[in-house]
Image (cartoon, rainbow, N blue to C red; front, side):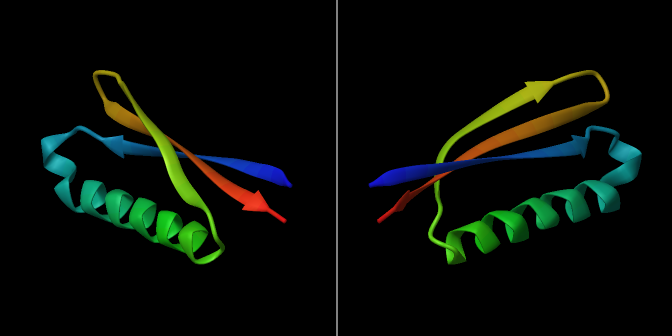
Length: 66
């Protein structure tokens, strides 16, 4: 039995004047996570890396292969 590991990085703006862009970025992240889930991946860990301009979410997903 082996394990596959994937990492997704999503950068989200912190600019209050860009709320539409932020909503779109978060929706895209959700869609990408859902796509991986449909392929058998499980979210194992999420880290948030903050800067003055943005937050970068680093999601680690795992899947056990038979």
